[in-house]
Structures are given as structure tokens and as C-alpha cells.
Image 1: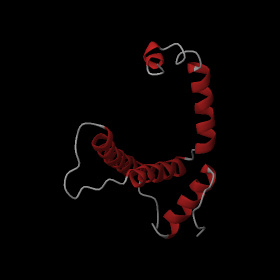
Image 2: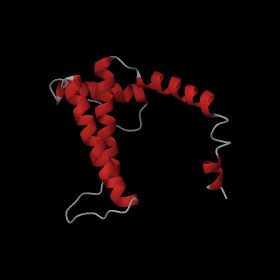
Image 3: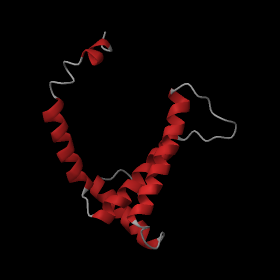
Length: 117
């Protein structure tokens, strides 16, 4: 298996697919992976709330924000592979959509302008 370094999104999709079929044996069902994704997002939210919000960490609670983000991304890559989604293409289209839709809206949003002062 290729040693992960800095790779493109399509390469990461291939690396995850290879890992699933060698180390993980096979993909969990799409619905199971959706549940796992929700769990991982919850773990990420827990750290964000404690680090940037008003709650404090409990004794022994882990604080590895990067690891939790990577867990979310891993499961999302699994779901993309399972459902035939090319995430690089989807992300490019999504950014174009957001740019066309929001290029003026955000610049004229008084709530965002107030934070620039």
C-alpha cells in the first residue's frame, strides 16, 4: 500500500479504497457508514465545543482535533467510494456554485462587515 503523504483528493479516494479492501476487508454498508460519519462528526463537535465554546474538557478526555477531522474525512471518502462520487469533481462544482451564488451576498452582509472593523 502506498505511504500517505500529501496527495490529491482522487489519490486519497484510491488509498482509502485500497486500505478498505486490504486491512478493512470490505466496506461497511452505506447506511452503517452514514451512522459512523454522524458519530465522528459528533466527536469533532465535542472537541470544538470544549476548545472554542464554553464547555471544559473532562478529565481524561482526548483533545486531538486533527485526528477527529481525519476520522470524518476518512468515512466521507468511504461513502464517496461506495456511491461512485468523485469528490474532486464534486468539490470543484460546489465551489463554482457557491462563488456564483455568494460573490455579492457575503460582501454586502452587514454581519460579516462588522467583523472587519
